[in-house]
Image (tube, rainbow, N blue to C red; front, side, top):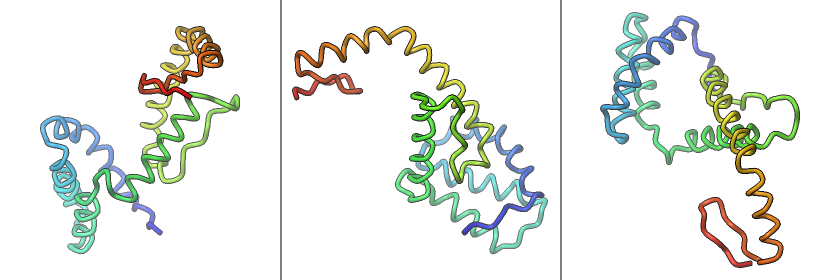
Length: 152
């Protein structure tokens, strides 16, 4: 179970937001976690974290990749959340998934833009989708998301 982040470190998040995007644009995906880890340690220096904390932070950030268990878990939660936004089943918006409260404002911005896009897509292409699903009943052809067909 992770400990709560001390308030004095929360300011670092805001400082990092403005600096990470240019670094991400100039750094390869494989080197990005290491670059971010170095940047985080540098931004934490004024708070004088002990060496053990620096090593832990550096290790946790530099080990992140798309195969990491926590990355997979959070990615699945974000995907499920955006799925709920795209096909709402209740009039109230879904709650922020557990573990994503630290990026709640960023996730809300993404979800808002995604929801608007899905709504526009339904308005523009809804009749085509309905027509396509009606046709599939008669032809036995199901169109997959990727655009490929599967005879069934």
